[in-house]
Length: 91
Image (cartoon, rainbow, N blue to C red; front, side, top):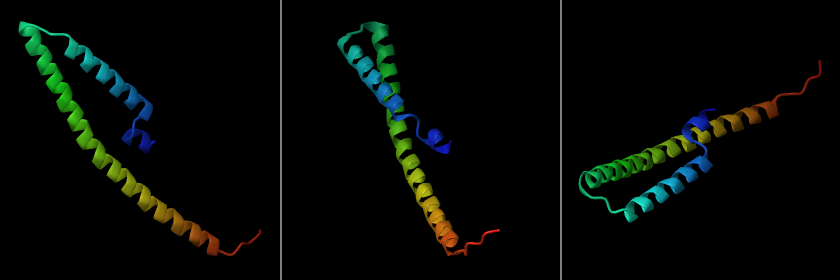
């Protein structure tokens, strides 16, 4: 459950990136004039800022996930070792 919160579906991320590229490509081919141009430049700037922010946030999330996974792996390994050392008894 927590992994889903930290890492949304990678296929969805790929689709979002693909659609974002198409939108930016369409916007580059369209040459706006006047107020429309200013508004589109603001929107593109906001989209770029959002994308950079998401990239900056994603790396610490991945690092945290790897750290938690490694810590849990050690705990599981220790538990398995302890369980292996326990004598088997049938009741």
